[in-house]
Length: 191
Ligand SMILES: N[C@@H](CCC(=O)N[C@@H](CS)C(=O)NCC(=O)O)C(=O)O
Picture 1 (cartoon, rainbow, N blue to C red):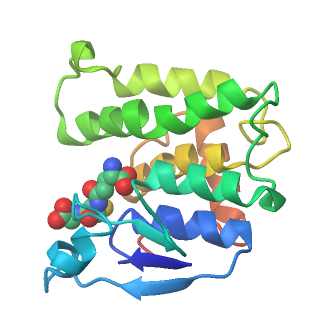
Picture 2 (cartoon, rainbow, N blue to C red):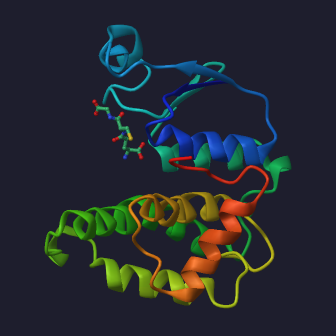
């Protein structure tokens, strides 16, 4: 399995997912300055010309949430996702998609100081944090004691925010980010 990678990118999220999975993989370095992500060879893997992208045999996957969903489903022995017919599955899928469709754009609005327009499909940073705080409950993870790919996707957003010295106002979410960063393979950004 090959992960197309640059440490200054969201490919760090896919790498975290792979590290948590214990699966073997190879990193293929992509130099943004040389435009390697826009080469015709790379565009055959991700037509959007962005990282991360994963190649597993014949299968090509791009978009960080798609990569996390793919890995957890393709390799169920990693125990990083509820089975397709498990009662937790609906909530799991919702959180996986929420990470990049709501939490991430809300985070972007907050960092850029832009007023969120809910008509575009996501709520503001405060409201999206309310959702995650309530989903987390007493934790320690989104599915209680069970660490899943949803923690990789949702947790990454809070760990990115931390790099910008933001998103630390809420004790429960701060403690969640601390727990994730302290995992042996936890995402270490800006280190
Ligand atoms: N929604 C995508 C975002 C991918 C993305 O924006 N990647 C950035 C790096 S973090 C990139 O490759 N930028 C290079 C470019 O657009 O030229 C995902 O989650 O995979």
